[in-house]
Image (cartoon, rainbow, N blue to C red):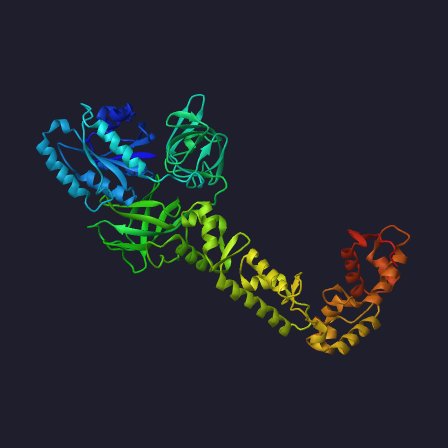
Length: 624
């Protein structure tokens, strides 16, 4: 569980953390010199009956709000620190707004430096604080008067923090691993080490993880790394659980190839980088309206990028929550359910935030119909939107923001969604595609009555759906006795191309004419001139019946006549050796018009092997 500090500069956040934990989180020389927190600081806090909490100490100076946001994301409990001698200040209000936007509902208010003021003044400040908290998630948070210098009130503060911790629901250990990196450094003898708050899942020694690194040239997206060691609250452990501060020693990467904002995820998860997200957005009271051209800064996880906000109706106004699409200037990795914060580009100020409802979408995608949609509702929208492509099962935990187990349970409850292979489809769409497939096969029979059926790939292209759904539809129609057992072509059960054409006499006439032509039959063009435009289809039908053979694209032989020609060639070449086309032309008595296509047919059939101008023959036994 993670406890994050918040509050105005010089209100005593770091001093209070040191009094509670014994750890000075200001580690940089400049922090010591200036007496302010600049970077994130971390410390373990032991609480009776709770265990160890990871404390993230954030800077309070206005110039370092972006650093504060990187630390506050992933926090379970907030410790809002307000100095009793000054009361709420500008960064107190901005930090409180950020905590609200990030969805942090548990917390305690520490009224520090209470030893510097009398009780009457403390009463007045406490009234101001309670008024400030009104209408925020911390409205009912206890306010504890304390002093890090004298120690007064610290036991009560510990009890209040423990009580708040008990109210925080546990994170799912069976969820996908995600660790946003907030620090990178090198330890002698260990190598590259990263730290962060383990948002979800668990990680153990020797685990394989994937680095999501925003596309820097030094490290490719999706780079696989190995975890050499794990520390949780500065102690070496075999496995770290979600909601804890962890340090991972990584093999296969140098420290200068990593930076804050990178993310480590499960090796078997389906993360996508994206420049377009859907979200529910709420602007803070008094914030200016956002149009599609308004530039903002998007803070998500430990990542900060420029962005634009697109709503369904043109502009996002303060007051209420609206659905939006967010277009980012650089790729981000997100998951449904992630909280984000928006800050104006100029002047720098927190203006709003919300929840990601679709972590990757397209440039033309519209925002969802309404805000606060449940996972089941968004699942239906996503399936409808995916249409014939289908929605990948592996995307669900990320697209819906649920654990893999919850995703499986959700699918079982959805009656309007069906599964084919590893993809999900709308049940109504499946029925539509099944009927369309039947209609396409029937249309092919009508337009090409001599074909044995519709080529399988042509049917797949006509439906423009996934392989899994296409194969499932074929299997379903075959099982119901609508289609013949599937092969290279699809045909209705009972379909007979010859009977459908009613051309038995014409088929016999063409076959007889080709046989009569012997080694020099009529070409396809000549046959079309004699028998009409359907001749090509009739020839294919005769070929399927093995009555004729296509020696080349424009010439068919009668099967008996071709067998006789093959026998003659076998007798001529039985002596062995190599033969030129000219030698064979004289022996067979054929012109080049007929000889060359016949020899190329022999090459394709494997009867001959060509080497320049020469051919060697090897007839399979017992060849005529």
